[in-house]
Length: 213
Image 1 (spheres, rainbow, N blue to C red):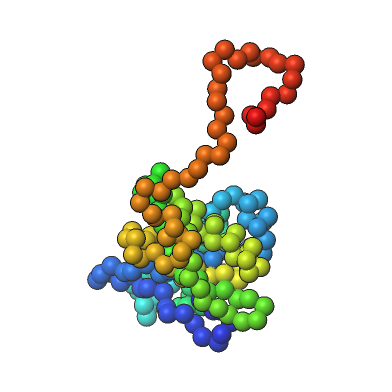
Image 2 (cartoon, rainbow, N blue to C red):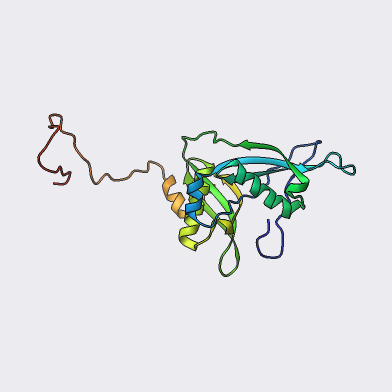
């Protein structure tokens, strides 16, 4: 993935017939505004596998797998070719998509801590950054990341490249204080505004109801 520094990131992982491959952690959306993102829908995590078309010199080309966060399959394929063209010199005209699979969260009702490594282009240069979020799924954490970066750093979607998304299962792996404070044992929050329900309350009233004394 080109980040404006004159260098390329480590190459995408090749899937050879002899063995498995690790996941390539290159993600991007490529939209300039938050409005464009939400017009197309929320993000979805896709696993895209493609390769170069077979030739006489290379009848069994290597497969390349990437995980892409995109609002739909069309954008996921587009981002896949964008990265593969830069990483492996394979473009859409000379390649083919082998598989596109949506990745679902295994435990969508469990609150989890996520660590995200990113690289983004600001108005002054290219920066590496590590962020942590407490969300229900990987896609929710990525959406929170884009909103956070847009608010704090005015970073556009096209300028943010997600390198890795990892679930932090151990408490000692959490580094940021704003996440560690939520991991305290027997954590409780005050209820400053409790509304008591009246059993014989009338359905209709001539006055506006108030819950403050």
